[in-house]
Length: 342
Image 1 (cartoon, rainbow, N blue to C red):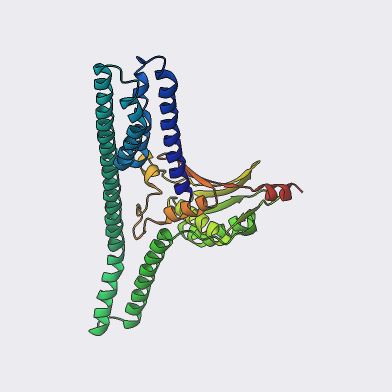
Image 2 (cartoon, rainbow, N blue to C red; image 1 turned 135 degrees about the vertical axis):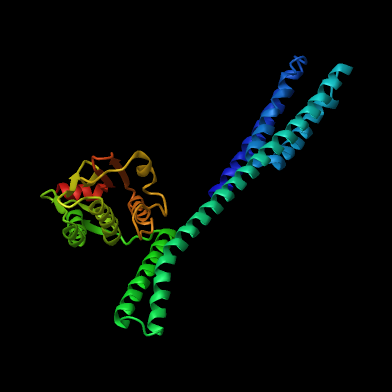
């Protein structure tokens, strides 16, 4: 509906320009015939039509402009042979201009569309390659241990356990791909951010203890309430915290802090790990990019999708040897902010 309105608006604007230029001819040419510069103004609506509608729009506008211009071609203003030649050339050149401008703009659009299709196909190919690569390893494991069971080799219980584990890995990969591909659907409710952060940290605590990493939290005494999807935001935070734990060495610490601000709320996850160079930081949220063995490369992409669907944003500050800090900014609605102040 909005696109149709814009098209109609553009058509009306072009028509008004044509009428104004024609009226200028009527009012001025009666007294000052040498002011042929007005003829050149017809190039303006032709060019605008070419920009908006391509070759077809440019030619239609040219034909309409020609019809409006014909009275000046045959009327009392055609005083001399040179006047007729001048106006004939004007019609020819404006028609040629409409043809060339429309053709070039159409060609540019076709090339841009083709380039977009090529980029899309390239992205699909890269995604398919990454998915196949991630699925291949657990599939090989399943086939290998299924063959051992069939041949009565080894412990069948152990083999079955490995098969189940590999199948769960494949299920997780497929789930991540589906979550990344489908539109984000949120189930918003008024939630306490402190509670969400505590639960996210608790989910990651076992992995942190196993790695010898200390998890600490710094939460405000008065918890802020935000209208959000608790499950999805918690999922994004778990991803960030787990990444911080995996990037840390035994004996290091991962800090999770909540910092209320005037119209937003910051959740900061800071680790003391090896850090990342600029190239890795820029690629961190790209789909299927991962440096972890067995990772799908979609965790960070999905996490960003979750935060951005809440009108939030994520920033990453990392330097080699100095750790990484991920900051999640979530907006606080006016109603929620007033409730917090009360």
